[in-house]
Image (tube, rainbow, N blue to C red; front, side, top):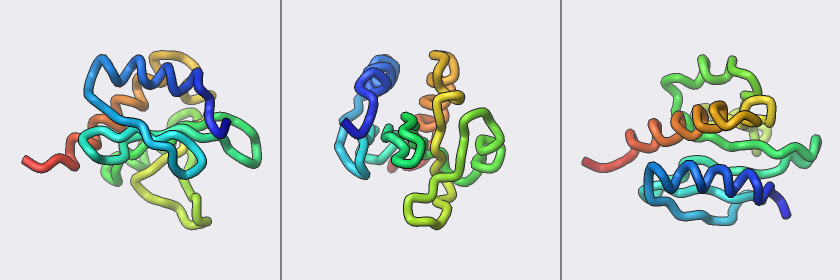
Length: 115
């Protein structure tokens, strides 16, 4: 398995309280789609074998969020993808921290919806 089923369950338990979502397997992990847009995902870092979140946070608060525990630049292609972050376990082990990152992703997701 390329991602933690336990982490997926934690995210699903949080999301189902807030919004409808669907999951898709992609990029070697699991992505959570909200209103048809990629919102967040999970995968395992091939170099460290750590679980990690992928958060779509947009560019507006990117630099501030990057300073938080566990946050790292997302660079699948070797080039940073501004507006997306990887969050490592020290940033989401506690439920309140995971909830924070999910709320950041959902907040940005709302900006993508058509009026």
